Image (cartoon, rainbow, N blue to C red; front, top):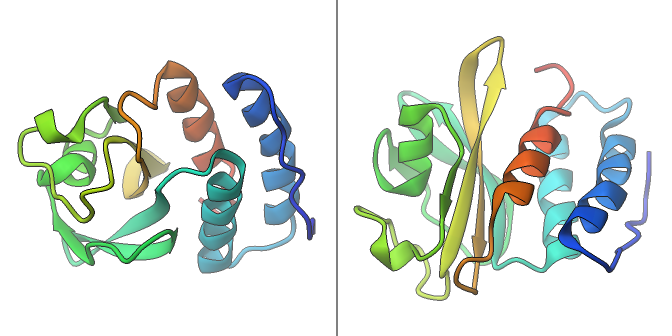
Length: 158
């Protein structure tokens, strides 16, 4: 298991290309979901210095807060509510350039300006979502979508 994270500079794509093998190292041989979600959150937060990075997991027909890095967050989110609940309902990644313009956005923090939410699938079923917030407008794009979808796909046992 890797113990140190090598923070890479360069283009967003170069940063992801450097980070993915390190995340694979963190996950290798570890089957505990909580530990793996925590390490993915920490690695992404360290590499990109986003405002908030974490997971929500489906429990009793709600998204429930899981491992994360950043300030305190909303604990439960209903299906279809906010960006996280909408990504769960649609079963697709959602990129929001300006959260103030997203209908029904749940404002856990006024510092959050843009957001990407990536569903986590197992055998075609959604188990939860990876939620990433930035303090900058329009901080996420298709490159983030491609690589974050790849990263959640690395989770062992899913």
